[in-house]
Length: 362
Image (cartoon, rainbow, N blue to C red; front, side, top):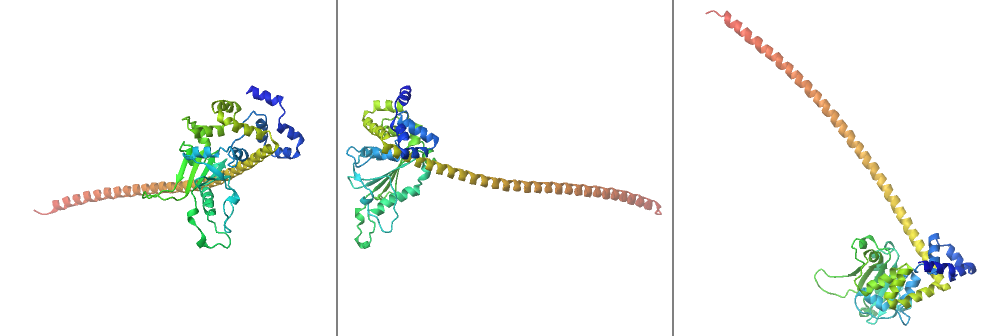
């Protein structure tokens, strides 16, 4: 790491130059948090690896329209079968219904077999629920046959609709995925009777935080890809590239982006967006925590009131029990007195009977 630190000291990088010469870059940079500014300078100084999962870099690495696109290899590893990406499907590649609401998707491509894939990068699983993922998938399905203005429903050909693969890559995955300790999940619709139908919609989830925590090393190509995408330390990246030379050209492309004004601006914009998302998540979490605390305080108040009521009832019950015991003791004392009086009367009667018997004539 000393080599990199010396490089930072001895070399004035593009970002440092731009901060002194380009007001737009400086203004964007100053909007970053202090941590974000340090991270951007470390990236520019090649002390830190750029975040390969940022929108700008990820889309540059896997741009389906460049000649040496790596997207086919990457998706093949995720799906576990060989696929070949023909081209991207941007807005003009899918028909829009006059009734549909536009959804912005990250990377949408078509394979040579006609099926379609949508690759989504999500910094936090909180921002992409299963329902939202289903909407993404359904949007692509419906766009394939969407009704255009003036078109009759009888003209729709449902046979042209192709399968849709929604691939979601989480940097921080939801709790449900973390509990499994597995980093790759594949979902598809199945019948409970064993009947097999092509129902078009498939989902693959990749959880990078689980991957880093579990550190699988089984030699699969997908593991190599995910290791590359999650490295942040330059020394670790250097060691990785020595073992996986095919990734060197990819990383060189990333480094060039971090030295280019447009690339730097895009990276700063991505970081700003991520900070906004993190801030939004933190605010949401704080709001949830505050609400939960209020609910807990209210429940605690109710519980204390119930405990007080219960104690009052217990105290009343004990007092009633004591009063009952006193009443019982009083009755037992009275009964004892009655018994004693009765015994005295019985003795007196016996004595009188004896006296009467003694006075009778023979």
